[in-house]
Each structure stands twice: as structure tokens, then as C-alpha cells.
Amino acid sequence: MQSLIAAAATRCPVLSKASSASREALMRHAVLRRLDRGSCVFTHGDAAESGYVLMEGWIKITRTQPCGAISILTLHAPGETFGFSDSIRRLSRKATAEAATACTVLSVSARSICQTMRNDPNFGDTILGHAFQQNDSLLEQLETLKIFSGVQRLACFLIRQAKPDQERHIVRLPFNKNLVAHYLGLKPESLSRSFARLKEHGVRTVPEGIEISDLDALNALVGDIAGLDLRMTA
Image (cartoon, rainbow, N blue to C red; front, side, top):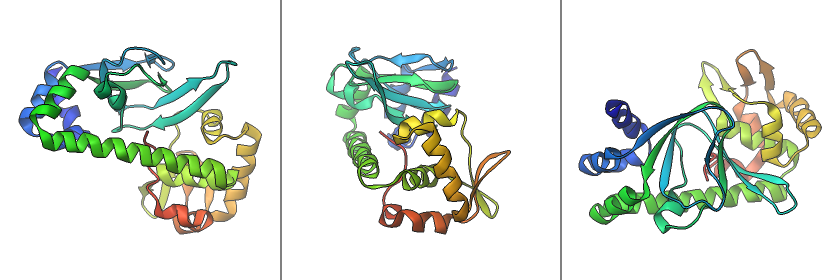
């Protein structure tokens, strides 16, 4: 199990930047957890005792309003981290993290993270830079909700998730499109209309997922936003 944890750490963009000694210290008490879809990683208001690295699957970060309405703040893909900021500041959780699919997460204790930041200033800089990057990404997501149409929001989402596959790009969604609609602030029927409108921009559904045959056309649709960091991190 420890060898699996060590290998997982080297694949994480944040933890891989720590020195070998620091990474060893971080992983000494780390725990690899496998979660079923719908499992809760942490709940709004919980004590923040760990930071997490998503190794497999997808995680959704949500907030529940007093009226009972649930907002999806972001979706995390493999390789991304979540829950670090609250852990470092020793604050209670500001949101709920739930497995959107079956997933594997690496749990790193807050005590280990803070101790390593004190012992390794370079790692502390990495964590700080990562927190700023996450904040910038949230601002960009807020911008898309405020000024872009539903079609443009969907285009931004597809650009973020597109993976090269020969002469095309493929987006593989391991969850239903209703979750995408909720995340983008759209009704399911609006999302369907947006997908239909994107056909003229080279987007179509195929057995492997969603195919983008002309990424330049999709970038042109969203204009200046294509120059921003479109990764789904928060």
C-alpha cells in the first residue's frame, strides 16, 4: 500500500514538487481511500483535518443553501487537489465534497502539510501558488456564469476537458449530463439545446464520449476566454 501511495504522490502536480524528503514525510501518514459514487469525503462545517489528492474518478464540491437548494461550486478531475486551503488555515470546511463517481482519493493530514511547509519553504511557495491559482480559476468560472451564454459555457467546459485523440479531441463524461447542466447553471433542456447548437462548431456525441473535430472553432466561439486557464480547479 505504501508503494501505491508514494507512486500516487509523484503523479500529483502539487506533491511532486516537494523534495523527496518532504514527500516522504507527507506520505508517512497518508491514507489511500476508495469511495463509491455518492460517498461524502467531508461536509460543510466539518473540522478540516486533511487535504486530498484525487487519483481516480470525479469529485463535486457543493454548498447547500438554507432553502435546501444545492449549488455545485466545481468538479475535480484526476490529479487535482481539494480541501488543502481549509486544512492549512485550520478552518472548518466551507463546502461539502462528494464522490460524483466511484473514485480514489489520497488523504494527507493537515498536521503533515503544515509541518512540511515550515520545513520546506519551496513546498510552502508551491502550496501558496496553488491556492492563488484555484482562486483565479473560481473567478474565471464566475465570469463565464455572468457574461457568457449557455452555449459558450458549455464550450468552455468542453475545452477544459478535451483530450487529444489522433486528429480529434474527446471528452469522456463518467457521469450523466444533468450534473454538467447543474454545474454550468443550465436546465437539462437548455444543455441539450446548447449541444445541438455546437454541432456546427464540430461537436458531436460518439460512442467514446463527446467528439470535438475542430477545437479552433470552439475556441473562436468563446473568444477571449480561450486565452484563460480553463482547467476545472477549485
